[in-house]
Image (cartoon, rainbow, N blue to C red; front, side, top):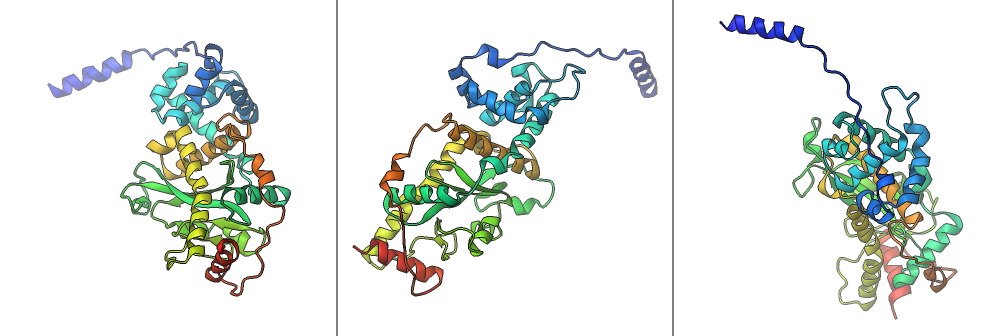
Length: 347
C-alpha cells in the first residue's frame, strides 16, 4: 500500500505544471513618504539617501533590465530598512514588494558597496585637521594633545558554525569585539571590526594598524582609553589609585569627561542603527561587513548633518593654538602619565 501511495505521489508531481513567475508592482518609498517619514523609517532624509545612492549606484546596478532587476535606489532602501530595524528578510522584502531572497541579495550587495568606501569616510586626523581636533578636545576638560578616544564594544551575532567558543564574550553571548576611535563631533576616525568577542580590548588595539602607526611616530598626539588598555606614551589611561593626590584626581576627571565621547558615539550609532544593538543574524564575516557599512553611514550622516546637528566649531576658538607638554622625565607610559598630570592638573 505504501508503495502504491508513493507511486501515485511521484506520478502526480510529474504531471504538475511549473508555477509561472510573478512580477509584482514594487513600491518606491521615496515617492510616497515625506522627509520626516523617511528619516523615521530609513534613518536619513531624502537628499542624503540620494547622495548615498549616487555613491554606490555604479557598483550595485545590474548590467541588464532582465527579469525586472531592482534599481539601485530600491536596493539601498531595503538595506537601510534592515539596519534601521534589524528585521527579517521576509519582512523587509514585503515593504517594497520583493521576495525574501531578493531582499537578502540587496542587503549583501549594498553593504559590500558601502563598506568599500571606508577609506573615504573613516580617516584618522592628520595635519591641520589634527590641530583642530586637539583644540576641540582641549576645550572640553583641559586635556592636552588629544587626537581621539578609543574603546571597544560588543556586537551580538548568531552562533557561528566554526570556532564557536572564540566568539563567546565575558558577558556570555556570541559577539564581535569592535574597536573604534572618535573625535569631538562623534565622527568615527578608526574602526576595527574583525575580532571575536573573547578577545580583550588591549589585544585588539595592540594588533591594530593605528597602534603600529603611533608606535612608529606617524601621529603626534594622544589617545584616551579606559583602564582596560595599557598605559603608553601615546595612550593615556586613568590612575587606578590616586592616593588622595589632587592632581591625579583632576587628571582622572578630565580624562573621563573627555573619553565619554566614545561612549556617546556608540550610543548614537546603536540608536540610529538598532541592528547593531539587537544583534546580527549572520556569520561573523558578513557581520563585520555590516558593522563597517553602518559606521560609514554614521559618518555620512554626521558630515551631512543628517544624524547629529550639534556644531562644535566654537571649540576651535576656545582651545589653545599650541599645546606643548614638554619632555617627560621617564620615557614610558606611567611616567608620561604622571608628568602630564603634574604639569597640566597640579594647580
